[in-house]
Image (cartoon, rainbow, N blue to C red):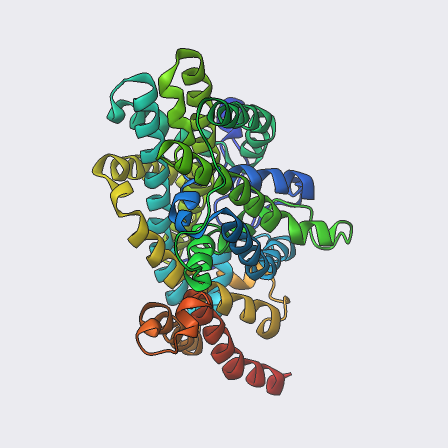
Length: 451
């Protein structure tokens, strides 16, 4: 077990190695906490603007564009508060969420979730790499496997340099990405007969919102503090509302715009992947290839980076963090994620999304209840690294049991709950709310009594 350890990162090397991020899971030093609300919005805008994001337009195609837009707006309203609270969490205590989860679920519980989310994020990395590889293969008529490895290596190199350089990359390539997809949208509307997609089946709000939140905002939410720990500390009152809104606005604006593009592409061409239009002409192909490559690099950095940090949390359960663990973990997970792309993770996308929502949403809601109303945002950073001394420190059974109830509802609730929970309400969100309420009813009175 990691006993007492220094909570200040070791001094960096010089030269290019000095730019490799090695802070790992330790508290981010104040001198590195400089990210503004605008920069954070761009980070999440670009992270959410994946080459895979237009797939939402295909998944919800039968509901029509108007109802899809409403489903995206409702999904934003559902995820607004959780994402905002996680943004504030990272600014209040500059740690990643899975470290904070040690007080919510116990050290052993946080370890298990860290292992699980390491593979979930690696799966997203593989999924997006697969979409990029297949798209670039179609555009360039080169081997898909070759593109998988090219994309994988570039993404690993980006993540090695950490959040400081990732933010620069997002900021200075955002215009290029917007131009590329804008040109592709122009090509779509000028070369194809495109009509406004209308509904072909009755709207099922529960199904539609579940698809959106598990594909976007609530799948990202627990990662928000991994970024906001580099933001201006919460002790500085300026921009509090902007920091609260930045992640959800960035995420959902991308989902809205690219979801619409994907739906119109599906209607006009029979394929949601707008970038495949570049396969029909050399100039358009170059533009599409650049756009796809940037979109994948943007979003996959925010899959590989949290995957690395989550793995470090799991390792830290048993041993003290060493300086070069973060870059080594990044390389290993990047290679494994690329292998997943080659093995065909894209063929299992819907099952993958279902698993994500069933697990992440109850986990997230319990963490928020614990941080805001049980810990009351007062736990110092060093306390999250204390050696467990009691069974309660290893396992917080109230959180584990509450999570179990939410998970059961998310997976099987549709078999026995009224139809309202299937057709109108998003079942994973219902499961998450039930988990949060059970945990609140269990722990908040105990905390009040102690106080």
